[in-house]
Amino acid sequence: MITIHCDACSRKLFRYQKIGKGKLLHCWLARISSDHSVREGDQVYCTCGQHIGVVEGPWINLHGGSFTVRGSALKK
Figure (cartoon, rainbow, N blue to C red):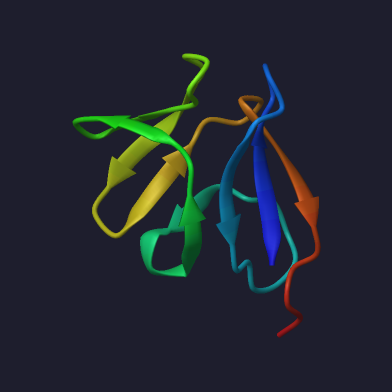
């Protein structure tokens, strides 16, 4: 499990089950175990107002540089 934090204020946004190595480009909605983000339509924000990403079907397309990742991914 990894924890995704806002880059601007360091608040926790998601607990997410990442599988495999590589950059985090999007989060599958089914793999998010806890969600602390704010949504306005299909836009995803932190509570401080930082724009995090856009919901596009079964995943959230994340904007690089708007979040930090802590933790480790599951190995395939």
